[in-house]
Image (cartoon, rainbow, N blue to C red; front, top):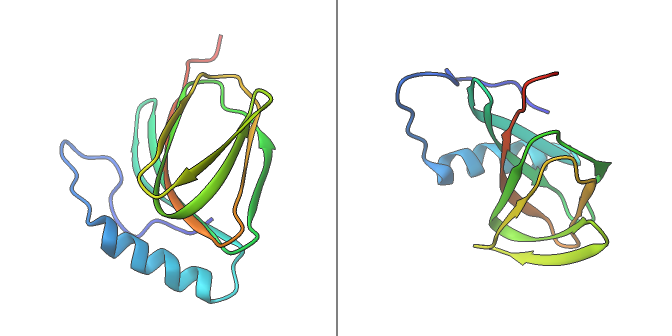
Length: 121
């Protein structure tokens, strides 16, 4: 995943998703299979732009808290809990915490991943 070049925690943040996508596409073009840019990191909230090249994958994993996946370019296939969703540009999927999931893409895709971390017990 890539380093962050800007402050990621502040009272108010504004991003141009188009500009962020340009930067992340440039990083993908340099040979990376996937790239992630954390946009927001504040307490339990994380928002990360994730890009996958064609035939890219995120292997099965899980987050303790709930997540959302909002596809902003291309299309991804999201697998969780024995189901598979084809998520085109503009789709938003919410998933409860603790569910193992994976992501695949044939043509490549970019999505915003929002994670709410739950406190350790």
